Length: 323
Ligand code: CP
Image 1 (tube, rainbow, N blue to C red):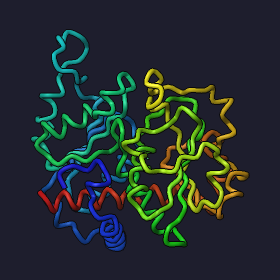
Image 2: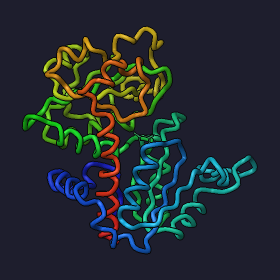
Image 3: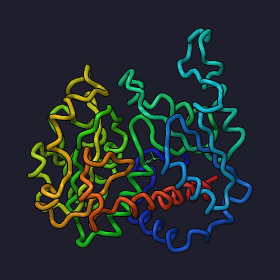
């Protein structure tokens, strides 16, 4: 594997899930693979889980790990080609990327949507430059449009906790005071549509996700109706994807005070099939989900986060095997 971006990059999902369990049972069995190999993890944005779980996964595989917080201590990077660099940006990404590639064997990059230009975000301008100019395998640690390490960990968690062959999985929009990217819901939709689940998406009108990720999903605008009989509830906020309203790309469409009926609470969970609750974290309590639901025995948010180590280890293992 040279790039980990989409569900198609992982190949057969049954094989990937089996490998995840193998890794989970014996996570130090492949330490030899990473001997004298270096993973460089580059963060343009904050992180807790991705940073720690990916470092841990790389260490499990015997790798050396370098973490770079681009906005803390590195030169400020210009990303546009053709600009006269007379401002506060001292280095261009086009030099920085091959330099970074020369110090490592595998690169992971986190670079969120900037919400300045939908086309740039959805064409993955930053990550594609890493793929093109680093000379190294590149895995996405949440980009402008996808978060595949999260979606893979989500799928592992669903597989571990499902009680029927084809569970009903509902992804619900929930309120948030700030404009959040669509990377997590895009990837979750993409992975669920490839998995053996009955997938339903529910959100207010105007928050339609890009068909590139959600085409084929059942969209139900009535949240309570969507929740009926669900086996898993996956909550997430996202800003306007700009599909039906390009001028609103990256915006919060309503005052969140008026949308609090979308918060996942006990009344919502009561119409499900005793559903398990999932969220990628970090989560704003009593905005996205009530204390009662996230603290309930049906909440899987901690084992879900723990599975981030496993999803990252499978991806790094496959990249190391292919170096
Ligand atoms: N879920 C997730 O990616 O968490 P972090 O933003 O803390 O890495």
